[in-house]
Image 1 (cartoon, rainbow, N blue to C red):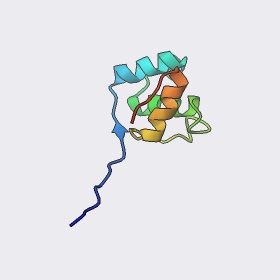
Image 2 (image 1 turned 120 degrees about the vertical axis):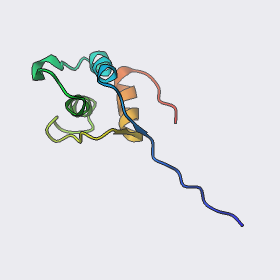
Image 3 (image 1 turned 180 degrees about the vertical axis):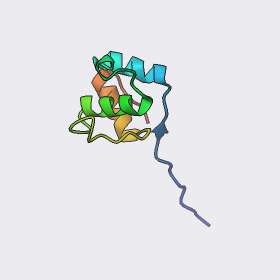
Length: 81
């Protein structure tokens, strides 16, 4: 009997320090927003790489596979699935 495998969509949680490093690699200025929370940094990153039109319009949930690909493209590296 054949069964289909459930394929989980990739999600990635990052620490505040890791998100700060991503922001630095992308050239995103997190200091202008003060002490940025992880959700604020995810919004800034999404807006910077073109996933959202602005930080206010960006989702603040953990990154999904498509988000990670856009971030990888933004920092000039590859993302292997």
